[in-house]
Amino acid sequence: MKKIRYIIAAAAAVAACTAQSTESEGNGQLSLTAVREGAYATKANDALADFVVDIVRPSDGWTKHYDRYMDIPQTISLGSGDYTLTVASPEYRDAAWDLPYYKGTADFTIRVDELTPVNVTATLQNMKVSFVLTESFKSELSSYSVVVTNATSWDAADAAGKTLTWSSLTGDVEQKAGYFSVAPLRVNVDGYRAVDNSESHSELIISDVAAQDHHIITLDARVTGLVSGVAITIDPSVNDRESDVTVPGWDEVPVDGGDNGDEGDSGEDPGDDPQPSTAPAMTWDANPEFASTPITDPMDVNITITAPEGIKSFVIDVDSATLGSIIAGMGGVENPDGTVKMDLIDNANLVNYLGTLGVPTGDKLKDKTEVEFSLSGLVPLILGFEPEKGSEHIFTLTVTDNKNQSLEKAVVFYVE
Image (cartoon, rainbow, N blue to C red; front, side, top):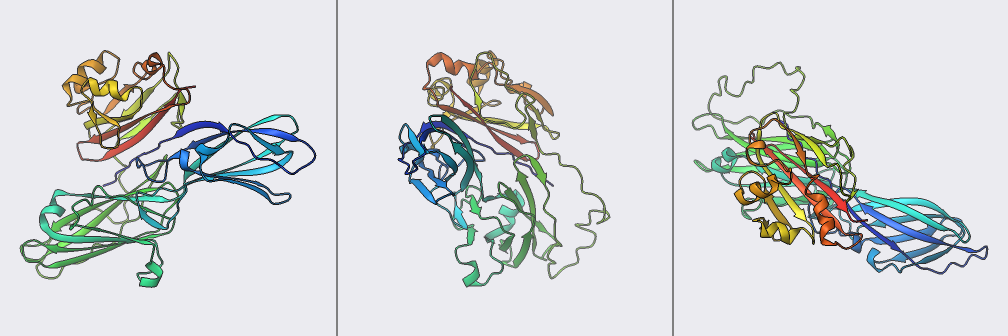
């Protein structure tokens, strides 16, 4: 079974900076716009305002460093010449909880008495790992631990600083997300069966990895005999933001005791091609890259959502200083991080109101396999409340189908 999740968030800000150059040929001005792409809905280390900024002139090694993007002055005067600008998250680790790392560079040329606009996009440089537990896994195992490392081995010295452990003792395995630098991942799962405390162990190597991948690993426990223990299986799925990345499987770890008979035999030839994914997907014809979009009236925000297994739930988390309080007043639920959740299927108040704005809700979404989903009537309303210029408004769409396969995608709008 394959799950695909597409998760993109972007933030846009415009600033200009000042620094005195030592070149004598004359000065020009730099106007900087930084965009952050690839966020996975975490507030740690991905705030554009806190990014570090470095400007380098390769010809003579001249450099200028800013500790925070938001602290850059209004104008920056640079001597004429060629430069490289880098923006990056303030902290980097090989493995850490909720710590995405972004980085972007741009080359530009300053000419005397000219204003040079520079756009730089900071993209996610590491990978996210999260887990989904089936009901069978949670009921069959009394305790378990999951260890993930991107070290070359489990040797303590090699794995130091590159390893994270999820445990049933914390009770938040499905809520904790780990971020790893780009390298093959090793996943170890150890569990104890609730009935007889028998042990089971599984290991998975994920070698097909890349920056911006989100590895969603499903843990399942299947009873292989009346008293034969539990076989833990790991079903990995990868989200490469825009392309479907398939992680190769592995042989199931055998369980001692009892005859499995034909149980677990899929009846398929191992050489058969894998079945196509049935997970939800989104396409936006007017904006195929889901790039950050200026708010206009009118505007085209018509997104095609396909869910072959049928839509079970559809939730939008709105991060907007302008619209958030209004949605909360209509019945939206405030999240701990300050965003407001819109349940488009089960929240009756929101279903009635949003329907008048052309947003599909309720029975127009429930169990549907394809929906033309529109925010064209909702997003332009932001302009009517005189939002701050340059402000961003993020709508994170999460679609879950009847097989509990989920797709999450953040659609970002900004005020020009």
